[in-house]
Length: 349
Image (cartoon, rainbow, N blue to C red; front, side):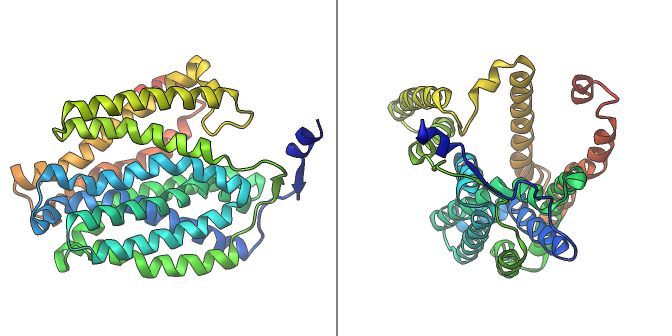
């Protein structure tokens, strides 16, 4: 009983209500810089994939790993890193993420073959996952409660702008320099972001004593999501069927064990019990299908434009910018309609 009491004991400033001027401006700028870089590098490579594939002498299907490696690592580790932020501090996880991301970007710029580039993208993905996992939590600490909605809205705007800037920035860089500069530009920005974050970002206002990080849970989370995507990837790359079947069996066993663990946990890393709520589970499935369709198009489109329609990197980037550019204008309008129009109708349209 005493152990449970210690586990639930909350210490810190329960009345915390954000930062004050001028520190709040520097803290917001810091979080936006890190978020912008991590989102940008999820899309900046798409335009350059045909060019990178040609220069490295690899097939189009193999070059997809430059994008997949980055996204896969984020999916496998974003929940564990968010859990680390609750235990060890959002600021600490964020700063370490900036360091890892910056070093990973430098390695990407120096890579001279596909294997090194993919490994560097994996390293870079760890940093991006650390940044993304605690970004919204930092926004909650930075903004006063009365302005929290404004902070979340600005956060979403940064994500949209980074998505828009990716193809355009890639096209601009490729018009005057080679593809390694797509990653090299992250290094000076990452260094500045780290020093700003160390000085201006706030520490966690409250902590739960006795709530330790569950490494076993984190490893099972990474293995479950990694095996799921890995099975799809191995099948699409003509790997022997026995390997694919082995991966599927491992995914089912580990995934089942992971789900059962989450259902027993008091503070689950992935709250499966919420899926019992019909509207929540339907929303999750809809979101997954929507983002899957978008990513399939965004990764495949550069090859269509470059190989079938013979656009150069600049033209490909400009055409691909139109998609996320529309989001910048439509997202605020959709936000204004929330509460006035049924969300099912709004999402369906």
